[in-house]
Length: 508
Image 1 (spheres, rainbow, N blue to C red):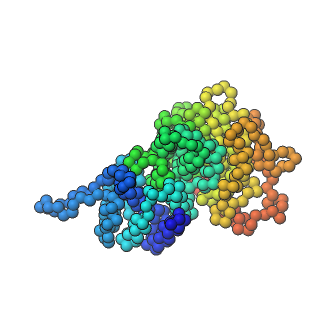
Image 2 (image 1 turned 30 degrees about the vertical axis):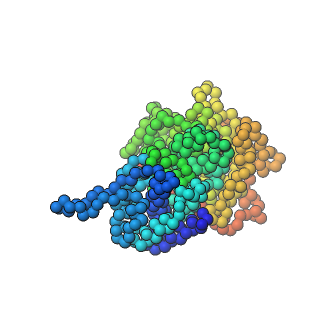
């Protein structure tokens, strides 16, 4: 059976369960639990003989002390032999018990609940998973199947799952530019479903002849993430495990704590991230010199340059802290980070001074599942202390002006950003050539010097130079459905901004 056939089969069953009120996200969650148990069961059998230990249910006794119900192992074999009401009851009990375990096992089952109340439908899901030998499948096929499910879940806009799913074409482009090397560490402080980790893993495997030591490091020591949402975290862990990252009986590679709370002292070679959008943070950061706003919750970050409640500015400062000297970062951030005054201006100045902010990719709307998002990718390399600013030139690639994408009819593809990767010149970023000139006024690749940036109002990095053809050339208007989507996105973006202003007023 092909991977696309399996994805289709799994998702067709999701449509049946929707009639029982089980949403896509809940269904994917249950698939994760059951798939994990099935694969663990396979590993305990020949030829693997892993010897994984699972907890048991408590022994039930009557008033006289006689055993009413003996202890049972909370594993796939026991579960798959149950039927009817007994199946539903045992499954619910299994989830509760496994949620208290340590390591990856406990993280997978944290806050787990049975969302499939009909035992007959639950048995259908179990039988479907039971028919496949998942561990004999290649990690590329398993990973592709689960990624396909995550993609479908993200497309269900009502669930809000799309905010944890960065477009894979964008992630692959970023990784192709950074080109992570073997035996290096990679972090993502808001890792969602693990897209950056998987793309980096694939890049390292496909572009290097790895020896045994490098393979072990890649599997168990390369990736380090934070994800505070339990359901998203379990999907990330499952996604990674299906791609051959981590072990069932090992410690979790994903930390459940909020990355912004403190500097844990760990430093990494690469940080690849798309922090959550939304300006207001639930906590206000205070540094040694700044005064914190009065919030119910606040915490101290002496390593930050600025006090702010802007989540993206806080993540940017945190990522800078996470990097080793000469460590590299690529971070997806919204437009306000490029032009916002106050704390935003100071953060930009400090970033250009203490790191080499060498490239900014301007992204179009219509590529994210949250409507109206205008974002950019900032590429920079951390540097040691210096009196002179490390940033000398910033190269901009404008992939927004006169670019139109929609999620369904015209999604952004990896080929759309091939020119950017070529111009980025990963093998030697110091040898680049502009495609823009005064004569043609069409090139998307342009350099601005540090002095030019510093001279701009508020040190703004919100720079455009191409003419919007839709304003001057009616023959080059995009298709009506794209225009309609852009209008909807602009309205929704305006509403979101208005909501944020209202929330700030209510908070203050």
